[in-house]
Structure formats: structure tokens, C-alpha cells
Image 1 (tube, rainbow, N blue to C red):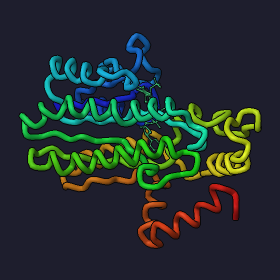
Image 2: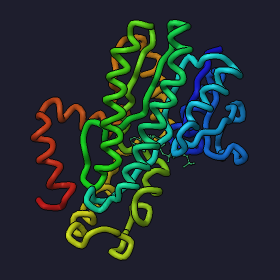
Image 3: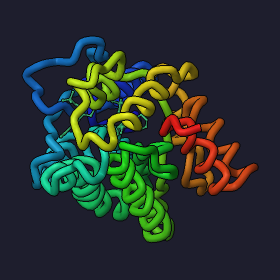
Length: 277
Ligand SMILES: NC(=O)c1ccc[n+]([C@@H]2O[C@H](COP(=O)([O-])OP(=O)(O)OC[C@H]3O[C@@H](n4cnc5c(N)ncnc54)[C@H](OP(=O)(O)O)[C@@H]3O)[C@@H](O)[C@H]2O)c1
């Protein structure tokens, strides 16, 4: 029975992936910040363990427990992550440090703790949930997107370094999946935000409003369950492909950029995102 460690199974993409693997009879460990609270909708066969990426040392301790309990995971699927919305100028240094700790440094710590066992065995897959926003930067998502660009960079570096040892690395790049992350990051859950709910410098308000309006009208979002099927297919892909845009929106933008070029896409979306057409 293959073993998978999935981070961030309290909701969204992580929970859907954990459920999918449990249904396929894999041995699944899923992480939450507080294991005393079993997430609603999580398959009863998923073993819970504790991880708080904001706490240095938490990832290494998790890897040690998981390996001691069941042996080296065949797949590490790092889905846990957090989002921030706002102008780069308005973000504090602490906010940058926190989001990089959760979305990058904690992730690297976990990978570093799992790699020795995978290398010793000569197999394994490390699947990092980065983002479409790890290849494109959206206005007012610069803090969040830069963590994902960095995670893409780490994934590509790992791809080179781990290939000789039979360890596959996959960068999973979702775009607009209908999950709780948007409601956690956007003012008023991303809908009908009044000016009182928009924080930041006065100068950015019209553009923040335009970006929120754009966000809330995106229609081709994908469900976490559909996304999980795509992620499982990427993980099962035995080729050495690294990058997988998943969900309809990510695939459409990635294809358009390939056809039209990165600059044309930036200029096209600048008008749409900033409301300056
Ligand atoms: N939804 C999208 O459109 C989209 C697009 C591109 C990339 N992504 C990426 O996909 C991944 C999953 O996000 P999602 O959309 O499924 O959102 P989600 O439903 O909010 O899931 C995020 C998960 O990460 C966990 N998490 C947050 N902070 C954590 C921390 N400090 N330590 C440990 N776990 C933590 C959350 O746990 P709590 O419940 O305790 O907060 C939750 O289980 C993220 O990496 C996200 O950046 C999502």
C-alpha cells in the first residue's frame, strides 16, 4: 500500500487529495494545525498529524514522526499554504517574513527532512503545490505570488538535484480553485468589499477595487475534487515533467502566454486587473 503525506487537509485542495488517495486505499497521513479537531468532510481513513508551518522545527518534527510510524512516504504532497492581498508598498516586513515562513521556509524544511529517506530507498515523489501565481504575478498578490515563484525555483532546483537518486519532483500550478483560501485573504470574502474593508494607501484604492471586481467575476473556477484528480494524475506521471498547470483557468492562461508571449499577456491583463482599459 503506497504511503502519502499530504499537508493542509483541513479544507480545499489538500483535503480533496487526501480523500482521493484514501478512496484509492493508499495509507494517507494528513496534516492540520490542531489534530484535536478532525476536519469536516475528511475521510475517516486519513491519519491526522500536526504541522504548523509558521513554527520553525514543526516540519522536521512531523517528518520524523511520520517516518518512524510508517516508513518513508512514497509521495510528499505539500498543499498547505496561505495567501495575502494588498499592495507591496503597504505590506510590513513582518507580513513578508510570515508568508515566506509558511509558504516557503516551512516547506523547504519538510522536504529536507523527507529527502534522506527517499534517497536511501532510491524512489519517491515530491509534489509541491505552487500556483499559476508562481509563474505570473497578479497585482496586489505580489507578497503571496513571490513565495510561489520562490517555491517554483526550489522545485526546479530539487528536480536537478534529486533526479540522479530516482526522486521525481512535480510543481503543481493551480489557478482559481473554489476553496476557502480566497475568503481568508480577500476583504469581505472577496465580494462586495466596501472601502471601509479595503486597507492600504489611498492611492491604490481604485486599483484594489478593480482587482477585487475582476477576482469576483472569474467564472471558470474548478472544484477541489476536480483539482485533486488532476494532481493525482500529475503525481502518477512517471515522466520527468516538472510543471503541471491544473484547473481550467491556469491551463488557459499558460496556453495564451505560450502563444502570445509573456509581455503581451502582462499588458492585456494589466488593463483588466487594474481597471485602466
Ligand atoms: N485555491 C486556489 O485557487 C489556489 C490557486 C493556486 C494555488 N493554491 C495553493 O493551493 C494550496 C491549497 O490551498 P487551498 O486553495 O486548498 O486553500 P485552503 O482551503 O485555505 O487550504 C489551505 C490549507 O493550508 C493550511 N495552512 C494554512 N496555514 C498553515 C500553517 N501555518 N501551517 C500548516 N498548515 C497551514 C490550512 O489550514 P487551516 O485550516 O488551519 O488554515 C488549510 O488546510 C495552497 O498552497 C495555495 O496557495 C490555491
